[in-house]
Length: 339
Image (cartoon, rainbow, N blue to C red):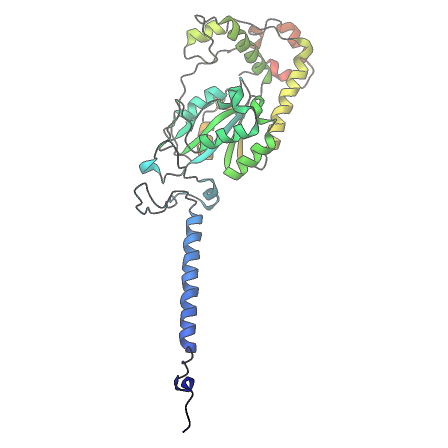
């Protein structure tokens, strides 16, 4: 009797239907497209907010404000401070800025205007402290803290700040490390506000007078770079510096060249160039600054009082020598221009 091969009793399995294969393929493609669209959408709104809160509850990603133009999107940031929670302000976008200037160019006065805005935090001259700028790594780490809203000063309005920054003098490590700083500004989308004086002779007078005040301390033994009363301003203005005629023109030229070089370094960074004299003569310039920072317009104010006013002939001890040295040079106009 013929025996059957047991394997012959096993029926061959049916082939996977072609239609079902196509259905599975279409579903996989659609799922992939959906996942990619979600990722692109989250990238497009530039939110860094965590999708889970501290209790593990899903949080809705931040959406773009309705008044934001497309070019602005890369400049919107959603910091996540390590030292506190922004809470209801977590989805308020923040712009980063830096005031780039020179000593005695009106930057302190200008900064008080900015800080009178409820949504702006400008944290002062952070790198005036030497060990903070001892190397580029230290500089970058400190900037990370500032822009992460983890740097605290009297100007901090951290939770709901719409613009946060600080003031940086050119001689405080910025020029020496300009390559790394430019790269940082471009990568982190930091906007630069350049503030200089057109009349750099008046700046020189202010620098010399401030240097004298550091030692003499005529205000009850206290050094003050800025004052808030006419009486204090009058006392400080009594000092009339004597200018070194030999160094006068070389120093004026160096000041001009340094400012021009700084602007050139940051030419590809989003920036605005302001001059102290324009701010004094035309306060609508402050509206331009608010527009540049993309914050709601407010009337800004400052309590600071100008120290050196009036003609330079009454502020410089050796005026006749200075006048003679600058007459006929490109700097002659500085002798008579106000502010």
